[in-house]
Length: 249
Image 1 (cartoon, rainbow, N blue to C red):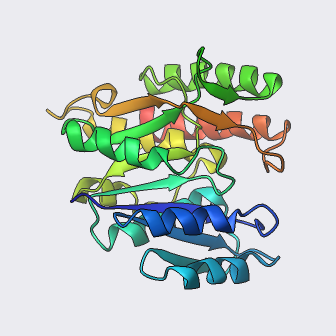
Image 2 (cartoon, helix red, strand yellow):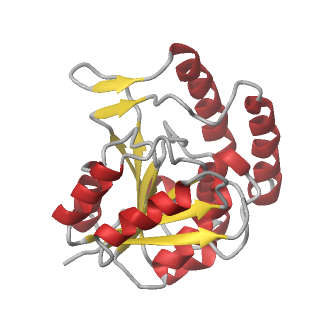
């Protein structure tokens, strides 16, 4: 049976964590382990996470970082910790549950059925019959960024920034995680860029053939998002850094 460890980065999430949903999910899914990473929170997040962990210690665990390192590094540390137990798959999921936890099983099913796929990314595509609710301004900013990111990567990815992703565990994947991220909020783009660099000049399949974008049935903007309008300027700088580090030569 395939197993999966899902990393859930948390920073000052005490007021937003839906403990009951996480506990119910853990009780019903023996093949999925939830690994919460407390990113040096200064509120009651860690104690809240410890209480969630205590409800199902065999399926929920907490990695407490001693200081705030940012979402990118919290996810990287969590993924490395998750890979240490050698599950079939690892991934990360936003703590606000903008994407329902039930989609994890769908991501795993795709990976089980298609051996050539190494990564499944949630994609927030507003299609008829689906409930994908994004603020209009954020949607258009996101589309502009996604277009620029896809051009820089040379990979036609639609949605780099959805906080729902699952990866097939391999020695190569673990190796890609050894170096700290430089991309800040857009570490998702950096993950793809590392794959592009690692495959350049090799006989490995192109990155476009190993990523599957899964159109989400449900996604919602959740109040309290920590990225603000002015942060998009920092994002542009980060994209430039990623391009020159991994893609320009």
